[in-house]
Structure formats: C-alpha cells, structure tokens
Image 1 (cartoon, rainbow, N blue to C red):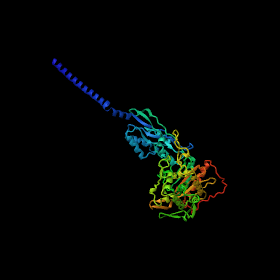
Image 2: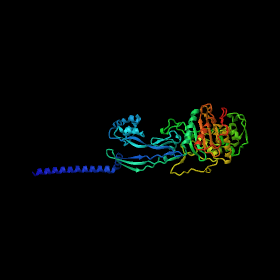
Image 3: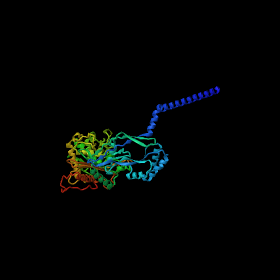
Amino acid sequence: MNFVNDMYQKKARRRTRILVLMLSFWVLAIIFRLLQLQVFHHAGLRAQVIEQNQNTADILPKRGTIYDRNGKILARSVPIPSIFYAPSAEPVEKQVASIRKLEDVLSLTPRDLDKIRAGLQKNSHFVWVKRKVDPRLAEMALSLKINGIRTQEETKRFYPLGTLAAHVLGGVDIDDNGLSGIEYKHNPVLQGQKGKVMILRDAKKREYHFEITAEPVNGRDIILTIDETIQYIAQKELEKAVADNRANWGVVIISCPASGEILAMASVPTFDPNSYPPPTPEADMNQGIRRNIEPGSTFKIVTAAAAIENHRVTSADAFDCREGSITIAGSQIRDHQAFGVLSFPEVIIHSSNVGTIQVGQRIGPELFSRTIQAFRFGRKTGIELPGEEPGKFAPTTAWNKRSLASLSIGYEISVTPLQILQAMNAIANRGALVPPRIIKAIPGVPDKTKKMTDAYPQVMSPAAAEKLVAVLERVVLEGTGRAAFIEGYDVAGKTGTTQKYDPQLKCYSSSKHIALFVGFVPVDKPLLSMIIVLDEPKKDEYYGGQVAAPVFREVARRVLRYLHVYPQKSPAKAVLTASLTRGEKP
C-alpha cells in the first residue's frame, strides 16, 4: 500500500515539475514577446498604429484676390465641392463597382477609374473621385447614397471677366498653384501657407476626432496697375485689327509714361483662364514681353535721340537720300519711296532709311552702342511678369561693316514690344527712363518702388528730348503716322514696318512683315503711351502707318474719353487727316 502511495506521489511531483516548467517557458515566452513588442519593435509598431488610426491632412488657405487699379475683381477663389471616397474593408473591385454608379453623373473616364483603383490598392484613407465639380452634380452624387461617398469643400480659381487680361493674370492647376502670369510669378504671395489637421480613427476606420495642429495663413491680395475698362478697349480693338488684317498675332500695350504703370496689356490669340491650360502654346504666349522682333523704323527714335543728344545733327542739316537707294558693304538698302534732299526732321518724319543710315554714320559705332544700352535694350525691363525676354544686342566687337547701318534702321537687334514702349516713354518723359510696372500694391507689403520721375536715369537731356518730341509730333501731323492723328489732341509717334527674316531662304522676306506704331498723347503732358504690333498682316496694306497707326487712334480716342481728357483744340479747326497712300511706307 505504501509502495502504491509512493508511486502516486512521485507521478504527482513529476507532473507538477512538468507543469511548472511549461508555465515557466510560457511566462518567459510572454516576457520575450512583450520585450520584443514594447522595446525592440516599439518604434515600428507605433508607427503602424499611428498610420492605421491617425492621419494628417492639409488645410488649404484662401488664395489672394487679384484686383485692377480701381478695385474690380480680376481673379478670386470661390468655394466649390469635391467628391471623395472613404475606403472600406471590402475587396477593391467591389468598392470600384460602387463608385461606378457615379460614372454617368460625374462623367468619369476609364482613366479616372484607374486612378481610383490605384488609390484603393494603396489602402489609402482618402481617394478623390472628382474634384471641383458643379454643386448640382455634387448633390446628385450624394443623393445616390453610395456608402463611403462624401463631399469636401475646396476652392476654385474664378476669372469673372473671362479672357480679359488673360496673359497678365495667367492660370492655375487643380491645386490652385500658379502656372503662368501673375498667378505664377507671385504664387507664394497669393497662395499663403497651408495648415495641418490631425484625424483620429477607431479600429473600424471611423473618424472620431479632428484636431488642427497648424492654422492656415491666407494669401495676400494683389492690386494691379491694369484698368479693366482700358484693358477691354485695347483687347477688343486688337482682336478686330488682327481679324481685319488676317494677322498671325498682335499686341497692344498701354502705359502711363510718368509712372511706368501698365494700364493695359493685350495679346491675340488669347485664352480663357477659367479653362487653363490654353488650347495651344501660341495662345498662352504673352507676346508683349516674350516675343523677340526686329523693331524696324520704330528704332529710329533711338537713332534720332543719339544724334540730337550728342550734337551730331541740327534741324537745319540736310541729307541727300539719293532717290531712295544706298549701298552699304556691297548690299543695297532702299527706301519705301524715292526721296531727294531731306532735312534731318524730314528724314524721321518720312521714315527714310537712306537718310537715317547717314545719320547713324555721323553718330558712329561706339556712341550709338552706348545710347542703345542707355535705353536698356538687350536687358529685361524688370516688369513683374514671368518669362520676359531680354532681347539681343551684340557688342561693337561683333559688328560687321553693315551693322551700323542696319541698327540705325532697326535691324540686327531683337527687342520686345514692351522695350520699344519703354524707350518711347523715356522720350515722352523728356529723357527720364522709368521702368514699366504692373503691380500697383500688395496690401500689407511696403511699396519700395520709386515714385519720383527725377529718381530715374536720364538717357537724354530734357532739351534734346523736347526737340525729338517736336519731330515725332510732325510724324503724326504730316508724315507716315497721319493715320494716328486724333482730332483735338496733339499726338507724337513713330511708325515701323519690318521685313521678317526667313531662316529657310536665309534672307529677308519681301512678303512677310511686322507692322508697328508707338506713340503718346497729349504731347505736352503725356497721359498715356501705346505700342501696337501686328504680325504678317495679309491685306494689300501692311505698313505700320496703314494698319497699326489706326489702332492707336481708335484705342487712344476711346481711352481719352473714358479718362475725361477733353480735347486740347477746337474740333472745328480744319486739320488734314488723310490716310497714307499705297506708295508710302513708314
């Protein structure tokens, strides 16, 4: 009996030791696992938990509004719904099938569905279905009561005036990031700073807590120098001129000479920034600052300025224009009509190439080069717009035997329309070169722009500029610019007709031209200046005095009336207003 009891006791002790050993291993395994989870893998596991249950999202700030000089809205951000899907634990294809119910309502494309599927496969907490949709479509989408479909309010850039000043304003992408124009150049100012929100979810991915960790900072507003009404006048007249003359493209820029403020900047072809990007690269191009052209006879204002300022000519000096032809370095350069002997003013008034070349020869390469650089050709004007071209002007060391003559009449140099206008403004300001500007103010940001004209460089003396102004006034009264005459007002200006270089033929074309006119009004105290450029007008009349000067007249006449600038002279006074004949070429 005792033997049996001993046997049972031994077995019991053995089972107890085994059980204790097993429990010890089990406790050690738990401790090891806890150490593994809480110590060795703590950082990684914590990150997984946070990823599954906590998410951060951007809070987009309100984008600044763009105004014209009179406070009229040119661009603003408006609230608009976007539709998103909150993923569930269901298979991806089943979720895609649910979203497909919105295919007709939201016009979802196969590409849209592929993006949604890719988002779901990444186990995203948030998948866009369609962003920035019509509020009525958003209501229709929600009315279908599809599980997981929700809306979130965003903002969309809205341009209430459509194509008006499109190249100045530019456009934005789906996230309201600027892509061109003011929207791009000043994107950081307009955009502001994003905020952050933390979203907590439970195990079933249900949101239960929102916490803003960083408040958004709204973007600043920008006030432009553009005048909405003047911009409208310029744009409509330009569109008409381009259509009537079947031109490839056209530019009108209007400025206030004393301040350099741009009142209008229009380019054709244009686009609607509400539907950005434009249909073609050409439509997206701001021709006024990005197009390099040879200025032709409009550049004679620089030649004349150099000659007068440096006392190389007087009003009494006469030039034999040799019946319209001169040979330079073996090449013949012609006038648009045969001229005999012309005084210096008449050379500019009638835009004689032969006479102007002789004026250039009196100036000489070094002096002429310094004058061109003083007018800041070959350099950007510094206007607050992206993509401005500096133009091209070679140093005298790169000139050939024909360069002085070519430059005198506006060839062998490339400029932008805005650079030509800047040069004319310097003459209108009696020698003071005032850089153009298109931003009037950014509220809350100090304006460091110089205000006084006398703070700017003097490219020619007031006395010399006054003499040149008198000549340019005669261009409009009796010369190639007669079509720019405005009854009751004194107008000064210069025409230009440039032959385009054909890179295939490696010579200048006799059938492709650029027509220009640049001028200002009134002469004594200029309130506005303007340049008009039309590329390849295809009617019989293609000279600057025939197709560009009339645009100046119509635009300036309407703008002066809008600005309540009354005629300086009695309209009843008899004035010669005849247009150019076909034989004349400015």
